[in-house]
Image (cartoon, rainbow, N blue to C red; front, side, top):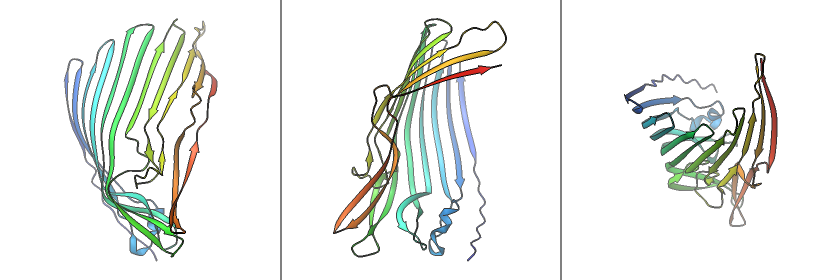
Length: 275
């Protein structure tokens, strides 16, 4: 059977800003509507998806001076009919995404930087957020009795959405042609699916990096940079993402997690030449 859908989207964007010297404040609103992917339409004739919409509200305040800068942004992203995986099997035996009526992301972003002297500079950012689905039904295969078992969750975390993300960098410039930086990143724990189960969770992790950039001055026109990266300095064993699969067997719920381990301590050396 042929499925024909015609969509007309209205995606407005508006904002207002206020500037006084180094201080800037702004308020903005934007709407985005997106049609389902091709695979989403393969759910079957009886469970066709509808477009998903997000209304994004942002309120921000920034200040920038010669030696420092800082900013704070509050955001609220309200989703309607967000397409998420539920574990439900469609008419052709595949797992596809299903519209969920209401979900949201509410957060606060902080960022700042300072350069008190020519030889040192520091910057960082922090995002604290709540990412929720108001009403979510998950489906799990039942190998004992056939079919699937459904469970409904109220106000559960959205999959792969950590509540805390932070990064910071301190850089030193002992001479004009040399930069030594120490970038660091922290990512909070996150769930592999929308059930908010501790059995299907990725642990938080902290990563430290060293970056050295040497840019010798050339007499002729052009530029060359020698760059050295030392990644995962402390050889942290961590996973950045993954997926999960659950089923009932022998009267017991079995959760199988498949994680993607990341590299331990490693280095990269590169040469960039601009003519």
